[in-house]
Picture 1 (tube, protein in one colour):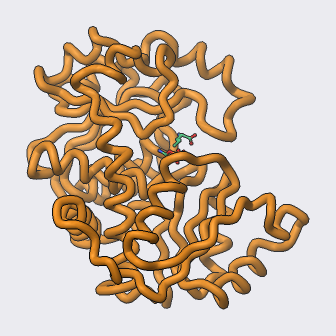
Picture 2 (tube, rainbow, N blue to C red; picture 1 turned 45 degrees about the horizontal axis):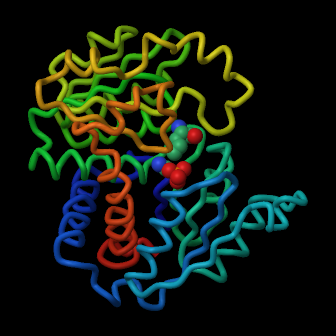
Amino acid sequence: MVRHYLEVLDLSRSEFIEAVRTAVRFKSEGYPPNGLRGTTLALIFEKPSTRTRVSFTSAIHRLGGSYDYISSAELQLARGEPVSDVGKVLSRYVDGLVCRVYSHATLRELATHSSVPVINALSDQHHPCQALADLMTVFELKRTFNGVKVAFVGDGNNVATSLMQACALTGVDFAIASPRGFSVSEEQTKRALEAARASGAEVTLTEDPKEAVKGADFVYTDVFVSMGFEAEREQRLKAFVPRYRVTRELMSLAKPQAKFMHCMPVKRGEEVDAEIADGPSSVMYDQAENRMHTEAALLYLIFGRWGWL
Ligand code: CP
Ligand code: NVA
């Protein structure tokens, strides 16, 4: 049966780590130019993107593969064609689908009907390609996943969920501080805790940002209002600002050399102060660059050694 990467836990611990290590190698030694020769992908996006779109297209190009980028508004999907038919038909043209959707249920439906691998380029619940780049960035800086702590402060959203599961899978300690009602979902936390039991990682949920960042090597945040949640903006700002903003004071409670992480795009002055986002501790541009290396590695392994197709 064909496999898909809809969420971090679709990969085993060893597969996830292999993808990170392959990405580190690609970054230092260059990409195998024919690594994806003859492979064609369709990139279907329901929402805007800077990093995900261009990192994927550049990775595919560098590996000698080809792609078609399609805004979902240009598909018959926009006129009510069932997702199942889109999955069945596109599978006959291309070797893989990379999709950014509003609802995770759309991805599941697509995957159910697709005979080629579907890769999640962000949904409302998960952002597993971001998590690969995040853990690569952690690994580059620490050279290990053992004895490392990542703290996430803010909305328990798609990015936080995938980060939590990636930390749990690889053995990185993870703490998240979110206001009541905005934490990661219980179901996803339960799955992260299961992975953490196997890896030995600690997963901590709190409402207190100061508690979460204690002893952290990395302090991570994301926007308080994700794409698709614009109608909740006022209510969200009331819940998050200013307590959950990453400030110099909050960073000073983490480890002395702690790094600041953000998936980007950043709202300076909202979830993080500009002096932190643009300061010397920030590694967000490395994370952004690592999107391309980890996606190249993921595709290379999926269509090569892992033989998902
Ligand atoms: N981090 C991320 O996914 O950015 P884009 O929305 O620009 O793709
Ligand atoms: N949580 C954000 C991430 C953007 C890359 C969103 O879903 O809009």
